[in-house]
Image (cartoon, rainbow over all chains, first blue to last red; front, side, top):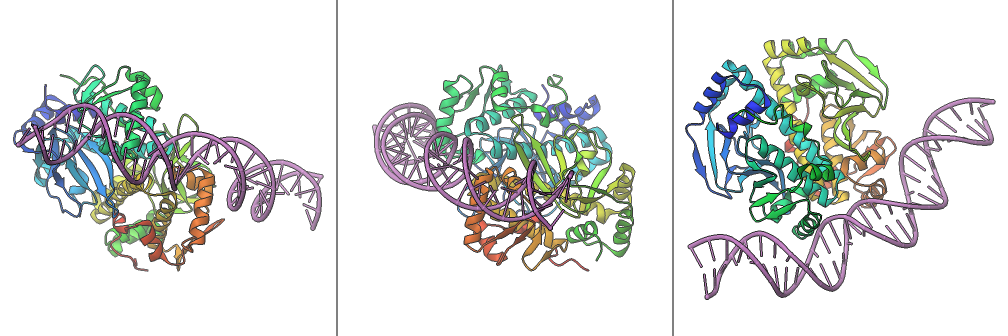
Length: 241
Length: 241
DNA sequence: CGACTTTTTGACCTAATTCAACTAATGTGG
DNA sequence: CCACATTAGTTGAATTAGGTCAAAAAGTCG
């Protein structure tokens, strides 16, 4: 199987063999980062673009009162800071939540892509539009849904995205989320996240174990949460192997 | 005073006289749209890019349960759908909340800009990054702040943005928002918006009249709401006349 | 085995919703 | 210009979703 980055981009826009080979070549030099490290911090002036090959990270920001809001989950294949890297200072941070394997692309590599790889460029471009659409979907999630449905919706999204890079197995996937992180994502207290998860468990909608999430019936959960995956713009549900 | 579009872009990235003149030329052909009309609807495949010259609009989406979430307020100078226009179907709608004057830019005009006007291109690019940063800020707003502070934060943002295009007068600005619209923005019921506005009024922080908002002390409101305007990336607070 | 973090539960409290009524405003046709 | 309809804003009372505080039960890990 090719790596998650190639797989993701290929799922957004059909790439030819040469494009895929080129991208695989870029992934040769990677480095490891342990859990709970910041890849980029608020105020940094990032140069390289980070691509996550393995592991999970979050986009987040701390408020003056010490609260944390998580804006996005970054999973294998995701490009963290393509747009932001090209301009000024970061207005949020990106931190790992598990050990990660990261590829850094230099500005000149990015420039080479935009100059010589139109299909890849378009895929990256689409990826950033999906990021923005996802942000809107999260806003709707926080604004209009109950705690249980918010959490259910997030799980549907993560399942869909992880499936697209081949990281699910029949309704279950690995993702070591703490209930505190879930709360910081959904604007809920940890206690209430716990109780909501209990509700979901008792309704047999989701089972959350320390580092695994299991969805017995994906379509039932999607119906419950009002999840419509079209905002993720996944053209192919089954990317080529 | 030049129009709001030129003024906004010039506030994001310094434009020279030729760029400004070019942009003014683009604004010659505009048309009017009455209030409560959709400029673009979910599922549309938009071709032209819409620029608002006068009036206000919102980005929004309806849920299956008939609830509405507003994602953004579009004010004079804002470009509604630059990125989305270049690809597939709209995943949200844009509707006017007042009568508007709109300019439509054809794809070929957009292409001409990117080919021949690097400073303008960069300003448009920055504008789309600001849109995304604003979405993150709204998510944090819904996730972490009380009803009163959410509303206060929105008013701070609107004041700052409207000031940048010259549409404020000493802490007050015109914006005919209903309390229902505010509720759909903040994920609050109309009733609770009403009570929260009462609190803000009694604390002498904000005074909201049918089509006008008055902030007696902008910096006091900003402190109350935890508003930090840096996400709006306004390099110049006082754009040239 | 401790030390630590995460999850779970109980009791209590508060913010926000719902339902319902009532009061401005705004607008329309005669 | 008034009578009537309509929409938006305001208020009260009852209810509920979610938060806070605190402590116990499970995991995790050196």
